[in-house]
Length: 375
Image (cartoon, rainbow, N blue to C red; front, side, top):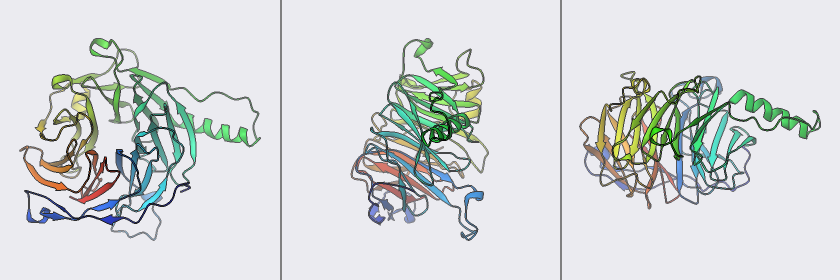
C-alpha cells in the first residue's frame, strides 16, 4: 500500500493483569500496535474473502484485516492476526472518526472525517479514489454487506446513502479526464441518492448522527446524540424510519454493532450508551419490537465521552466493554457479571471490537495504541 509516513515501530507486547475469571485470564500479554500519535476513534475487523487469499496461504488460518481511525488524521490498515502494520491512508485534513472496509471484497476502504468529507480508498495501493463532500463533521460511515451501498452520517443530522458503483464509475471518469482521455466537461461528484433526516423526537430539529451500520443491503441503522436508534429502509424514503429505539434517559449513543451470532443465528444489535450496554434482536427491532433482549450496567465504566462494547460473534455469551477508565472488561451477557478485567492502556478506552472468529478482541485508546487481546 502506498504511504507517505514512516513505518511504525515493530509490534510490541505489554504485560497486564486481570481480576476475576479463570486462571488463564489472570495474566495476559496483549499485542501492542504502535503507530498512531493521537487518540483512537474507531477499530474494525474484517475477514478477507477466500477469493482474495493467495493459494500458498496456510489453509488452517483465516486472513483478517484490522482498520483504525484516529484523531491524527491517518487511518491505518493492519493484519488482524498479528497487528503488523500494512499501510496508512494519507489525505484527510481533520480527525478520522470512522474507518471501514468493503465486507464483500476488502478491496475498498472508506473513512469519515472532521474535515467535512468522506474518502474512498483503494485498500491495496492506498490511493484515494473519490472524495464525497459534506456540510459538517462526518462521524459514521458503513458499507452494506454486498458492497452495493454506502451510508454516512454526522453533525448534519442526515443519513446519506450512495450507490457505490455510481460513485466509483464517476471517479474513474474523472481520472481519465485529468489524463486527457476524456473531455474536461463532466458531472460533479455524484450526490447521495437518499437523504434520511434523523430529527429529534417527532421529527423536529437536527440531531447529530453518531453511528451508522447496515442490517442488510436495504436496511440501515443509525444511532444519535438524543439517545435514539432508528432503522431505515432505503428503498422507501417516504414515511420516515421503520422503527425507533428510545434509550432510557436519552443518553447519547456512543457505539453500535450488528453481528449474527454463529451458534444461535440471532442477529444482535449491541448499543453502548451512558453506563449500560443494550442487546436487541436486530431484525425484530427493525419490525418494531424494540424491547431489549438484555442490558448490563457496566459502572464504573461509562460511555459519555468515549468507549464502546462488542459481542462475541461465535457464542454470544460474553461481551467486552471499555470507556471512561483505563481498564478493559469482559462480561457475561446474561448474568451481567464481570468475568475479566485487563489493565494495560495509559488512557481511556475509546473503541473495542471482537474479531470475526471470537478468538481475540482489539481495543483502541486515548494513549494512541491498539492492543489485541486473547479472548
